[in-house]
Image (cartoon, rainbow, N blue to C red; front, side, top):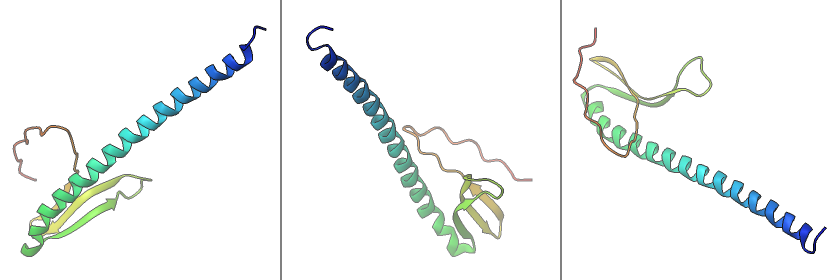
Length: 104
């Protein structure tokens, strides 16, 4: 063994651990930012849909999907026109809205 060999190996191990922890931290940060953006988007949509409650609609938010562990419906509107569901996605750019389709 050369002078400083064991210290060098420990330093390399520590640097590998540092890289791993940095990657995990960055992944956790990205995930937190995505969830925060999703929350803000859902809050903006809910604020817009609340107007419909004055017209006889009931807004139900963040409802668990029956029979699943973690699936949910972001928003349900129940009212004179029937039942509508909304899944809200927050994305960096706004895609063009699809043309409305009649419910059958």
